[in-house]
Amino acid sequence: MFYEIPIEKRHIGDCHGFSEFIECVEINGRGVYVYGNNKEELTPEYVRKCLVGITKLKRLIEASSPQEAIDFFHSKYRGAIIGGNGRKDKAAWIDETESILELPNCHDRHVNENGDLICGPEVGDNGNGEFGMCVLEGFDPPSHNCPVSTFLHGIADNEGGAIETQEIGGFKVVRLISILKRNK
Image (cartoon, rainbow, N blue to C red; front, side):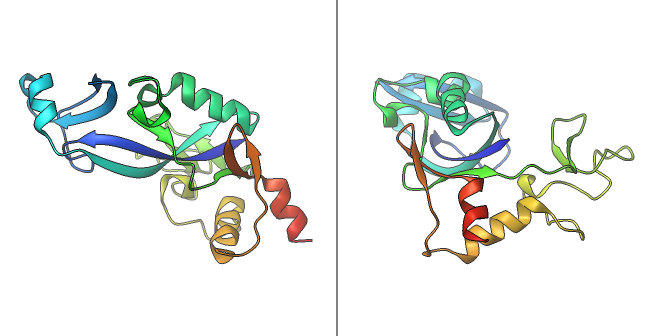
């Protein structure tokens, strides 16, 4: 089972552009990702002068339960380890204002040689799946029924509606079973 974890990440530099290096460091008890092109600039003095940004993004974690996904994030995700003792002192943390999503299984979901999720078995030399790239990588769904796309559209269509969440590990989780019950 895949879980989509909403996270927030503290950074300096252009996290959306092309950087020659990315470092995750602790400065004054706060974790921060540093994106840059000149590694010699990576000094505590330089980092302290930089404008700090917070970026919201999603991470996919494969786990057997929501708690296992949360535990994996906190113990294995580098940004969730680097920083002070407080949750938001880390370089990355789970965004408690959004829900973790338990995503449906898909028999067409595969992983290519580069580690990207693809739709269908890998074909050709470009890393694409038989039906293209997976919607979980931000691509359009295939022409046939995609359970993940259907699920995500169901969540979006009910924005502000009554989607049942469970609290697990201190975070809101939308369980697949709650969506299936509601749609009966």
